[in-house]
Length: 247
Image: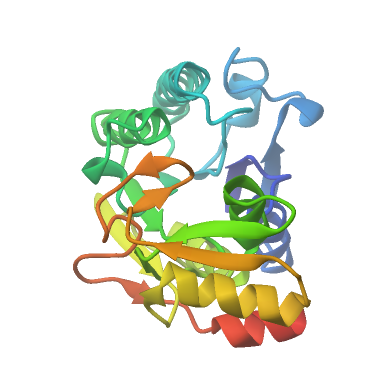
């Protein structure tokens, strides 16, 4: 099977591409460095010739509202048009749990538009909505902290290891299109403060965790349950403690 992995050089994309190649599939890495640019459309037509599945793991250069919106809008339109011409049989896109519950946040609004573009394209599709990655913890602490402390709200949290995300993407990309949304999350749910405290202690950091009930994440006010699935979801296997031991 020929598969185009857009964003195939990123955290998830590189391992997805590797696993699919090892399984015997013909994998095309969709990245500007490989001559394929989903925003300008450069190289798309050639890359999609004979392609069965497109896995979209692309991301904007910045989470800034307009930057993200411009990126996902252009990428989505170019991919849909080119995939229709090429007769692509399955388009899978990786999105975020809670995307449709906080569209006042510009980045989530952009991701929601990306999802809607896929749904309305006429191409068989699968949307995977994932919770935050374990690997995102260092960024969370850097953004919400300083040299001595980190401010974390007691929102619900259920992070997932990138390795589990990779496995779900590979598995679902090879199955029949769901023409719907599949949510994935880690095996443990607790308050975000508990995960952050465990990370700080494990890494031996001197930062003090300052807990509050402001329900803020990356400076945005959010519903307390925005970052966790509300209904059915597929659970990853790697616990946060096991991930800490291996990273």
